[in-house]
Amino acid sequence: MRTVTVGVLGSGTVGQDVLNLIERRQNIFSDVGVKIEVAGVLVRDVNKKRNIPDGIRVTSECDFLQECGVVIETMGGVERPLEILHPYLRSGRPVITANKALLAEKWTELRKYALDGKLYYEASVMAGTPVIGPMSTVLRASTFTRLQAVLNGTCNYILTQMEAGKEYADALAEAQALGYAEDPPTLDVGGYDTAHKLTVLARFCADGDFPYSAVQVTGIENLTLADVQDALKHGEKYKLVAELEKAGTGWKATVAPKRLPETHALCTAGASRNALVYEGEECGTLIFAGGGAGGMITASAMVGDLLDFLLGFPGHVPLH
Image (tube, rainbow, N blue to C red; front, side):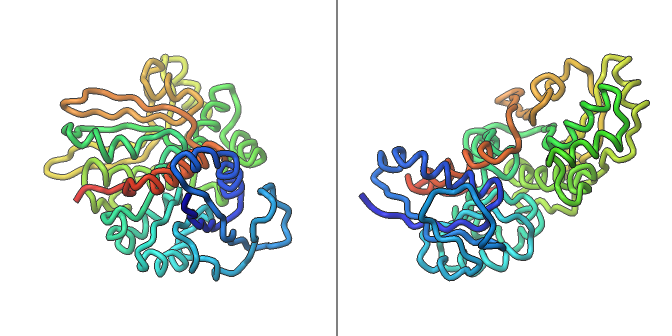
């Protein structure tokens, strides 16, 4: 039985659930001959009450990273996590993250480590619904042609409330009250959260260096109740759709609200969940759907990445 020391950055909902799931699933680590020890959890406020297993060091200092064999990043943001993780990655040790903004916007700094298999980030696009794993492995044999996806639960919720007759402002306020919308909500309703995720996906099927700046983004802020109700009358629904398709010799990536037939896979499989339709010449049309957010849903993918690391599988390698 070998011991692997883990460090966790951030202890919000996802960070707490990662720690609880590691504790709950110690049996699967034992099955592969590993004992997991958590060296520490980096937080902003050490006095805040948290639902985590007893005995874990909670600290505002990063000193415990020196003893970690792998780090799990759940803190969010861009500049601060990069500042902490860059020296750690340079030492040749792996990182598990769900941080789509960091991956999308700081790819120049991170790509080398991704190509070396040191970055694990299944949870960054659809949380616990696996899409990066298939796209980075078996689907490489098929010629990619197009994808469409609904990747933001907050927009899904708001549009569903508007279908029920609520004005946009009221639906947004309700989403914020329930804690669905990020702060600021522009990340969600402006389409930027979806654009981050589309950028990550594009690097597995279109261009390994696909830049975040190439995504054309339009949010749902200007959709009116009349727009949504008119679509319903014609057997259609509005969805915030991420789309990637061939355009000349390159690729066109867009995020925008679209009217889709009620029978479209993004409206049925993704009725209240995230969904992705992947098209390839050889594999045909594939549909992925499931929970795309939530603490334990996201934690399930991150702990799954941890298990992959322990088994010796590399991280998620983009197109070369």
